[in-house]
Length: 131
Image 1 (spheres, rainbow, N blue to C red):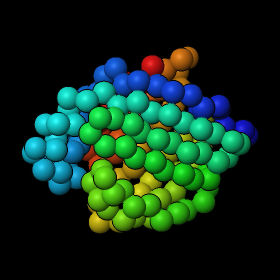
Image 2: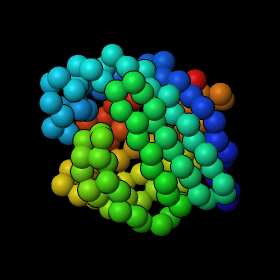
Image 3: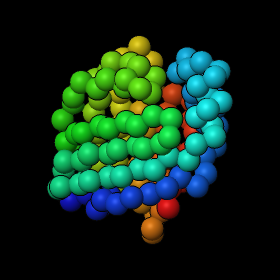
């Protein structure tokens, strides 16, 4: 089954439990306070099973590139500065990411609902909405 087309640009309009999520990753108080003030933009480029996801903000930018079902080495430099093994799969039309490393149960889930992109981050669950 082909994945839905995630290609597009979305702006964050809400997030819940983001501070707690960042705390669980060991992110310092100053960075957490700055991060809570910004509303990042996500740009997803999809070509079949290949993806590039860029998260852009005034604080930091991040880019991840992957192919569904293929584990890769990820360096989260600029975010929480971890090195991990990452695997993204398609599950019921959702992109489900699992990251193996020093933080257990770390990852995220993206899905589309109409014109909205949803995001759930795992370790300590937080949710975000991009439109």
